[in-house]
Image (cartoon, rainbow, N blue to C red; front, side, top):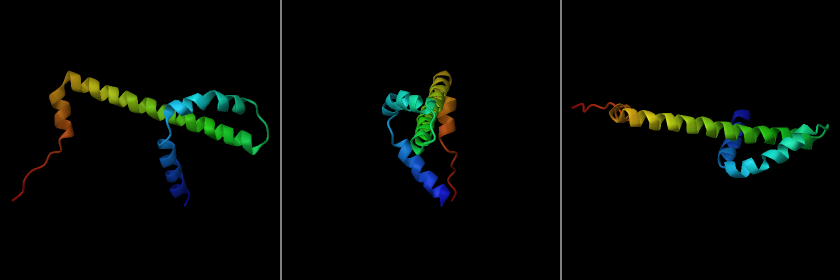
Length: 91
């Protein structure tokens, strides 16, 4: 049940625009920095880290894409060969 809920949350979070989230980063950072014993403060902390998680995910994704593009420039045949599955016709 909890894993299903987390997967649903992840799906919704993946649909969020990083630029819009970046705009909210300062707002939730400020709220998080001003501790109080409220649910609103707790939610602010969670939201702040969700924003950072999306930023980190995008950073990692972009790094891997850039590495793949660099490898393709350096050795296009090897990269292309790696993407094509090795299939054989069996009669």
